[in-house]
Each structure stands twice: as C-alpha cells, then as structure tokens.
Length: 160
Image (tube, rainbow, N blue to C red):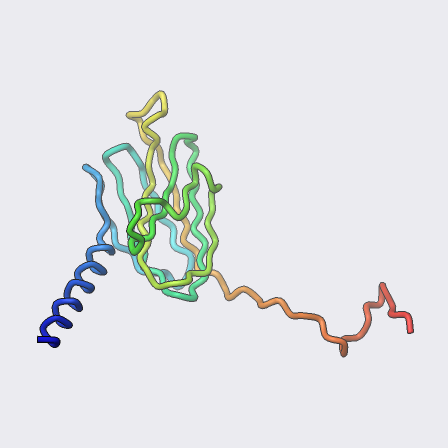
C-alpha cells in the first residue's frame, strides 16, 4: 500500500512539474522551442497583439546569460517568464526594467520569452519589428580580498 501511495505521489509530482513547463499561449501565438546557444543567437520577428511568436528557452543552474531586446517602436516590449514559477509574474520586462537582462541562473528551468505590442497604444493594430539577442556570458570573475602580503600601491606607499 505504501508503494502504491509513493507511486501516485511521484506521478502527481512529475505531472505538476511537466505541466508547469508548458506555457499558456494566447490566441494567435506560435511557440518556437529554442536550445541554449553556445554563441550569440539573434531572434528577429514582428509582434502584433494576438499574432506573433513566443519562445521557450531552457536554462541550467550556473549559466550566465544576457537577453537584450531592441525595437524602433515605443509600444513593443519583451517579458520573460519562469515556467517553473506558479504565479504569472514576469521575472523581467523591458517596459519597466530596461532593454537587457543579465543574470546567473540559480535553478535549472525554462523561460518563456514573450515579445508583445502594447494594447494601450493609440495604433494598437499595427505591430512592430523586434530583435532579441541571447548571449551566453563568460563566468564573472570572483572578487578577491586584499591580503597583507600584497605589495603596497606605488601611488599610496605604506607608512611604517
């Protein structure tokens, strides 16, 4: 009986994990599944409310990545969602956070990159071209603490 309960619990956990990784698409959106690039990857497209591409990008713990969004439109934006998180809050959005997102990934997950055209714009039916750069970053250098054995700076000699 314990084995059956453990199996059911495991299956429920796996179903919830796989369910959390599936993005909810809006009408007219097309999903494109990406792989984490070894070098800079550029995605170009046209965003229009209810008719555009969204992207899933798997990221692994410890990876350093920069995602940049560029458009000539002041009404086009990019939101990045973590599909493993139960809430629908974006982890990054160009409307409030600037045009690029640089991070060291803490937990392996899948991101949803959703370029969109703001519905509140006065010309809401037009859409806009965009470009998204996904750039793997080199490992950030670790800061080193000065030690007493280091030689003094030539600009500020030590007084003894």
